[in-house]
Image (cartoon, rainbow, N blue to C red; front, side):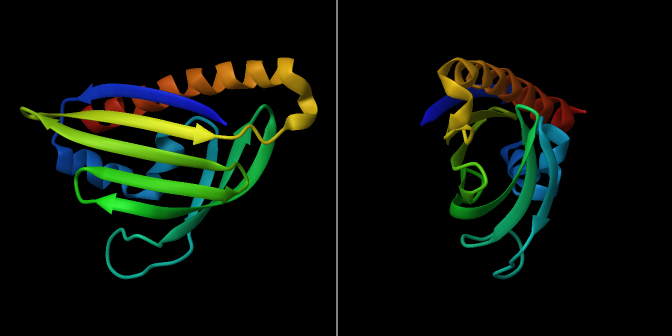
Length: 146
């Protein structure tokens, strides 16, 4: 399993960052490779533990169909999603207020779903995924600050 950790300061309130991240329809806007997201369940108004959604994601030129479930929420502080279909992964977003801005920490634990490519190709994919995570964090910051 690979892990990527990133942090950025976003010059908007925690509430605004939380609202943006909790709307999965925004994912194709900020996540490189994310093609589409479709919410499948709603356990009530808003964003709730147990909600899940389907997605299409492009990695290494291959398109993966997946499904994620929201497994933990602490309002305006933490969001954790887990994918067991498509690309096995856990995304953990931690939000911390700092004056009028937000420190956003993202940890992604995932498995590269293409073992047939071998270790050399896997290293290339891991490096590319790190670069795409940097771009995702930059996209979140830019989208929220503009």
